[in-house]
Amino acid sequence: NMCAQYKGPMGRVQLSSLVSLLACDSNPDVQLYACSAIWCVARTEANRKSLGDLRACKCLLDVMFNTDQKRIQEWCAAALWLLSTHTPNAVEIALQGYAISKMITLMRPDTSWDAKSFVTASRNFSKAQYG
Image 1: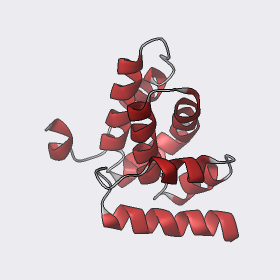
Image 2: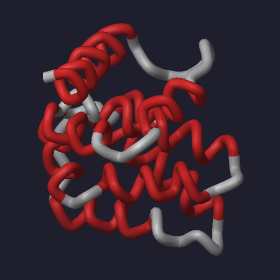
Image 3: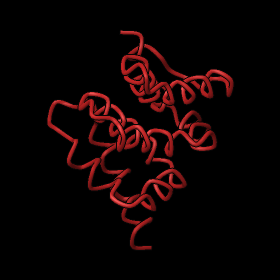
């Protein structure tokens, strides 16, 4: 599994290319690839910051709310959850209406989220919502 072996920051051009693939709503397979790839690279803290700067959270939220493909929604939620461990990303997500409740609804026991990411994201969401 390439994702399990991947570590380290990616260049802005590569990250920007992944984010731009989310707009390919005519091809769900491309969106699924982009969501899962963003989740993979978001495992690195530097990439979480860069992806936030590239508005990946907004793009993932748009896809999550506008697709009827459950698997794509789940991967969007997983990527958003991991991106939310960077506080500015958590704030952006928290400010988007029902994003948090939608993400929680999409969570299931067989997702790839680890406990540390879950706890950190939960803290960031709490800070963003309640100060």
